[in-house]
Length: 343
Image: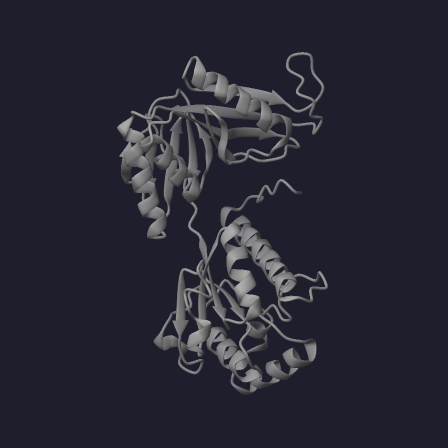
């Protein structure tokens, strides 16, 4: 969503009217679920996707037509099965409803809202983006429901963690990118950091070799730290929200990093290495007071089992496991299905 607001701000500063298309309801099988968004300008798609295929193609056409003629907000329902009303050639079997939000480039409220939203993302602060389905000005709230920009909704506030349509408004949480702490700046890390950026993680890289923690080597990392693996706490604090990936340049450093992380909270911990190495390390961890319960939380060997060999393949394997863990944690927190469109 951060990139979406960046694109909106850029376009309105250049005096380009826009249509923000948001899926506000879905029923049954559909390419994307509620909350998927895309931004459309006079020339077509600018950013995002609501699933591709016929729904997206028709939505882009409708948005372009709107920009050239009416310039209004509207709601439109698509039936993804054979029907006489509007058969768009999709037979997924479900239905989706899209909100076409007209954005006037001269509306200062949108510029202020985008700037406030980007500040929230920069500071890793959560919040809520609230669209008025009548088409009037949206609103932006922080995580405590304090108004940051826009016009406050007239309907009652939703329950905590609720997203979706509430009365005449559509609520969407501002996603905070989860942090991945990568211990070891080698070849796999170099392949992993840009990949994680594309799937909504932010990366910190830690190594004791200065040449492996440069911004030139990791231009997409949020932070690079040169430190001592025996004194990790001097440079960073691992929290219960962090995903930790350990793949240093040696078994000793792997063990030091793993021992440090296991003594505190974390969201995910994965360690590279063979099953034989893992068994040896686990024995040493027990000798240092780490319980079997804690050791069982470690993903080792790290990654999903796709028979990865090259650094790039291993990076894909690790990213896949991180995506799965994130989805499972979000489901547990929300008490609801993750709604992955692939399942």
